[in-house]
Amino acid sequence: MEDYLIGIGKRIKEIRKNSNSTISDIAQKAGVTSGLISRIENGRTIPSLPVLLKIISSLETEVTEFFKGMPQTNGAGYIVSRKEENSIIEKEDDALGFTYTYIFGKQLSSLGFETVLLQIEPNSKRGKVTTDAFEFKYVLSGECHYVIGEDEICLREGDSIFFDGRIPHVPVNRGNISTTMLVLYFFI
Image (cartoon, rainbow, N blue to C red; front, side, top):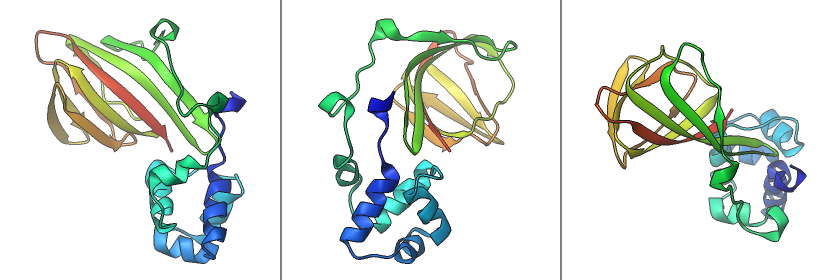
């Protein structure tokens, strides 16, 4: 696990100091408090993905450039997750027709994320749920209706959606074939 840990706070501090910016400068540009920037730089708190992206923008650097200076796993610029290593995740007991397959997830020092494969059968049933994550979903096959709060969005193969998982939500498969989605959870 140690191989996957990267110092986002240290990287923010490094870029900030190299540009002769103060914590206050970065906080003001990012629309956050100086205290938050300080806590992130010192590894005492984890920024949400939107806040991290605002901070990177306030550092006047590209996201790819920001992560380029980070330590990489075993010297490689990628992490591979093999199909045979995937496992089924036990979820809510009252969810019928939902299969979550765990694909990949790591804690990257200040940004936790998981990737799962979600299969939703026709006539599946579950109430709305919430998560402590921003969620990105990409429809690999099939079609489903995503209910987020009071809104309902129809998603077809190739469509994707990104939303705050703290809003009650549920996918509904009203079709007659299974729907498969790639799901990324970015933990807050």
